[in-house]
Image (tube, rainbow, N blue to C red; front, side, top):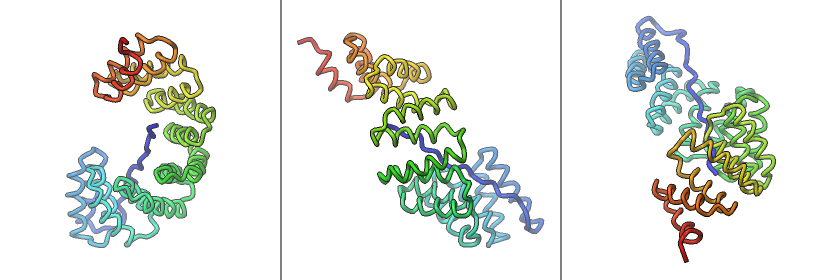
Length: 271
């Protein structure tokens, strides 16, 4: 099952103590981040650091801009320097953890989220993201505890319910997973992962008609979702709708999901 990984967003630093020469490029960098001009933001913070080479906020904001351009190695170097200069910046630890996650350093990311939580115990995103990294390391119990805490702190985040649902599925608690997917869909009716995962869970519980309803919704929202056609085809076959199932499987295969043809060989070819 696919999880909905939740990434942190930048905590945009506010200009505070620079001289007038550095104030202009710093504020310019913030404006460019807000407008999505990340290359421009990097150039602006380069200028700040030429004038104020030991400013932690300039490093961490430049790091965020680099991360948004998927330069995670460059972002890491800037986060490291920013944290060295200001070891009490909870957002810097959280954002560095995101870069570590993208670099598949899950243990390092967990360490950074733990530090961020120590500095800011009500940081729901840090708990949710730490749960995702624990899940990547197959620490389902640890992930569940983090998802529970994240939901306690922020009960309106759909992705956390969906990810907790995945963890519950993997622990065999399919009914509990259903409840989480229901809540996730209530909070975000456009989340494809929630419908797919709820459909798969319904299929596990032998509610194939309910599963098909969820796959229909995914296809309505995303007509090119190959997995939805594939899973709907399997559920239709379970309901003895061989023609409908084989049509869906063929569609999934035509769209590039090659494993569909293995199922077609088993159930759909004339013998």
